[in-house]
Image (spheres, rainbow, N blue to C red):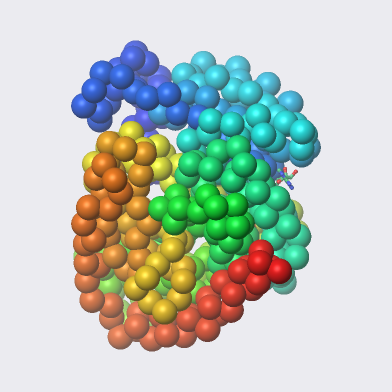
Length: 362
Ligand SMILES: NC(=O)c1ccc[n+]([C@@H]2O[C@H](COP(=O)([O-])OP(=O)(O)OC[C@H]3O[C@@H](n4cnc5c(N)ncnc54)[C@H](O)[C@@H]3O)[C@@H](O)[C@H]2O)c1
Ligand SMILES: O=C(O)C[C@H](O)C(=O)O
């Protein structure tokens, strides 16, 4: 488990809470932060809600789903951590769930079954995401939106178009959650490189489907002398990680537990960025200007005393301050294998992005 997540879970049982919430902050006070989970009663939503309840940076946790929310909210609310939990169960309550949210996490929608691609989920999930984003534009237009619902390569562009139409679009605040790809790349790399997994870092760029997932093992740390064959196999396993889980679950859905972990890591990074913690770096599928594609997942650094952390662009790191990005950091050279992977991924990524834009603007 990632060191920061382990630290905060451990700290819940070993330190007085007043110490926990102050760790890493210059000021004595930790801000109030509301996090809303849309799809909170689902396979991802439940463990993700649990993990957000364990996060000491959260003061208000709003759990929304169209089914089974009261039970999940009652259950999670009994955990003796900082946040107050409120469940919202119907369309009529969506506005209240979103009002005042700093971070909105969206794992609402149907998951894959064996034999399906993520794009096969488009017809159902596009409509769900569009409706939820319309509500976000209305009730919490300044929230950071963490999009988990698939196909991420299309649902993020849908969200962007909905926000543009509403006049609320801020590219610095919309994120496709690709953290699970990073989580997998780290795990698989550690296994082959025989290094402690907690020390591993691997940027993953591109998108979140098949060959659009581009792990950059040439930049993985700690360094290891892995053969081309091993790098190829690691890349393929990372790209097919979702399918590996879908097949193992044999019709009972896709990754939920590892996704909840990844979603919690990413939301925690968002909260830290909002709170002004420096040097917070994650990968995410965000608006980009570096390639000819309008969206691209890449590594980003977010911090700043104001409420922003910034998307970055293809294979880049950025440093943020009070008003967002302060500095864009170079990512470094790609291997020939990675350059080839990037070129191969572009047509699929482009078509998924265009599909989302077309759906939302029709
Ligand atoms: N980004 C990633 O890395 C990643 C990883 C895993 C899964 N996913 C995606 O996340 C989504 C959810 O997966 P899951 O396994 O949790 O599915 P699930 O079916 O277990 O849960 C989905 C939940 O969404 C709810 N829901 C449906 N429509 C809704 C609406 N309009 N408003 C609020 N809630 C609504 C359902 O009631 C259900 O509780 C899928 O699209 C899946 O493909 C993404
Ligand atoms: O593979 C899926 O359908 C779910 C998710 O995108 C994943 O990567 O696990």
